[in-house]
Image 1 (tube, rainbow, N blue to C red):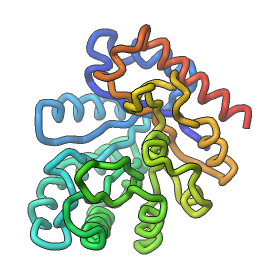
Image 2: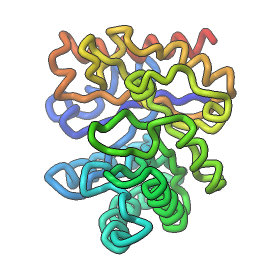
Image 3: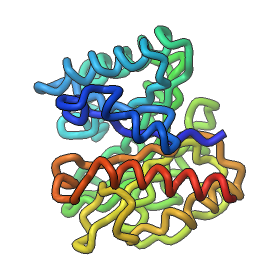
Image 4: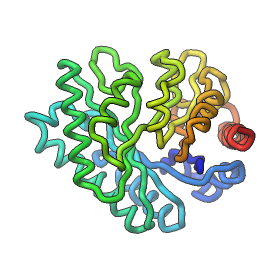
Length: 274
């Protein structure tokens, strides 16, 4: 089964309220939510409170592990392991708490390491980090995400092969792939190979504007999301397709709430007609 979801942030619901904001999305097929867990800064407490509120209200809520520096597995296999275990413990435990509260197995999206060392070293950091998160969790289903380029850095997860190889090497039933449709356009990668498609269990969907800035509603036509969805369905995909919107960037979109609802209606039509 394919679940359509929205990456929710407290700022989305400040004025209209949670259900008023979500109602038009739900009317067009949205069923699940996702929350990015950054435990340092002003967003942590409101995000955690909103996620818990949504789980108690009966939503299946998924999570994105923190990824902004210093949350980066670079050095996890060597000098930074103790520091990074301490940093990541709180958001990982929160995802597990929500799993117990809602009695479900949440997706937990994870970025590979990035840095200025060799790719082989960063790959080992990522491998060790993923193994630690697997050992630290019981219910979370880890989704290693394919990533866009980061200028000036080497980054694990910029190719289909890198992501597939790590998932295959660790070979754990709770480790799969998150395919971000916009990221692969930014990398000019085209449709993934069969082994990537078959291991994908989570999707981030958004459009790019004409300046190729990402995380917009599906209004520009610069991401071939229909073809991507159909390729996944042909591969037997069952998982969540989560719309990830940058609310600050997308604020320039006229009548944004309606554009979000229309995006869900478009996705529902593709899923229903395939």
